[in-house]
Length: 353
Ligand code: FES
Image 1 (cartoon, rainbow, N blue to C red):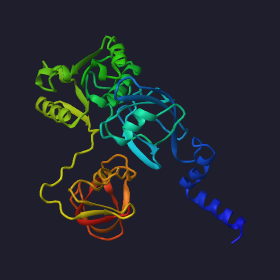
Image 2 (image 1 turned 120 degrees about the vertical axis):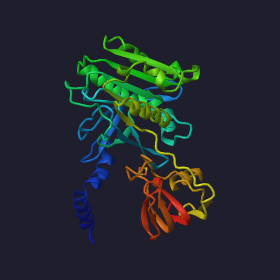
Image 3 (image 1 turned 90 degrees about the vertical axis):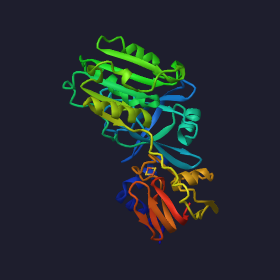
Image 4 (image 1 turned 60 degrees about the horizontal axis):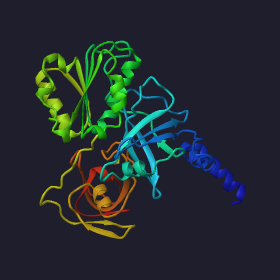
């Protein structure tokens, strides 16, 4: 085969598979893409000990978002593309750049990397916005009284809603109840104080390290404190309490569970070994997801949502039986593509990692 034929073949293959075109284009400029969405980091600030706030100018393919939705953001760490879901904090009506704030979890591989290393000029991968955690109604026709509840990094989609309502000149009452460790752990304290100067907006902080009570009935003195609708985002315990309170009050509540479900090892039931064939590593199966067990053994396979949504953690199971953590279905066929984040070994399993 001549060099020209090989070149022509590459071009034809690239044209037939748009993502392949982007692989060529990124060699020229990572911000020049045909189909994929990318974003260049335009500003970075580290307002608290644990957070990084940054703005991203997306490529032309990005079509906007609704307040409360999330975007999958990917970056390359040690040669492996890693993806996580983050919610923009800005108003859905702003257009232009996207603002994110990421909190570095103690065991958060990606969040810690962004907190420590993200710099202006970096290029991140982005996806279209997704998620059903959005404001009810349409701009100009929202419920009159809106109660927002957030905990920790759950502030970002909630702040996006607050900023959106301000842009829409919503004149009904908007009451935000925000839980965080202490004042110094709130990257948006100054912005929330500014927004609280609007006559129809109130912001209440609960500092848990200062003895602030977790969400309970005492935060709702009367029925109207629930609003016509509640919107809550934060840790599972906060959302569980909110669901119970709103159910008892008979008021609609929308929640965004930004923490992936924790899958506990079935005590005493986990058996066999988990073998990562490319790394040559063998660990005793402890019953957690294969992704968790891979990371605990020092591997960092590509991953994203950790909830079975994005498929970025897909790898080939060479042999053995796995159980889908979400559905309970088992799979004992060899050479199957499985999602590591929602698959647990059932006995001896080999994964091509
Ligand atoms: S990390 Fe998203 S599906 Fe596994």
